[in-house]
Length: 274
Ligand code: PGA
Image (cartoon, rainbow, N blue to C red; front, side, top):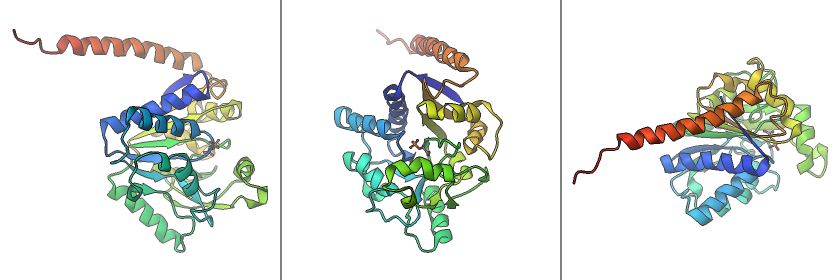
């Protein structure tokens, strides 16, 4: 895991957007896994800015979202379909045919979940998966106790998640109790993973998933098993990390390394013949 500690929410968002931009530039037809919630809003704003001001091109990009509430149609203003349209898709040049957000109105839920997994496979798998983290340690809606090998399926939301998400609804009772969500096993198949978290409220759970044991009690801890994970935190979310100084030192030293690496590649560049 590469832990990158940034000063605040804005810097966290810019660093996350740059990692996504690097992926799209490296591979214009990238398959991105996307997330909803309060955390990625700044990242999406920065990606929209990059599209408008720098011409970041999404025309060949394919996306798969992590999850959707069961029973909410895409037109519902609290559905994740609606969230993605409003906060990213309608502002960039993505082809709507390449966008996938689980359908919360699916009737044959098991069949739908199998289809969703197959669509990810048919697209060549996810190159870079963006994640937030719930205060109970969930990634997507993989609540505590979810199998670390789980696939896309129906999941019952934890009480703490219902309470956390009640802020987006008129009443707590309006928060759906079920969701269709990618599994932990589905997420771990992404080639690279980028988890972002900010704020004091996430400090304890960030320490648990980064430095604690791998456990289904904190499903984000399964990311310790993945070879290419970036965790971008703000100071507040990083405040309970035991080894924060080490992570900062790694970033500092790596900058020197990239200096050396670019120098090496410069030295190796063939000299033009006169
Ligand atoms: P948040 O949600 O970004 O709104 O904090 C994160 C999550 O539940 O995954």
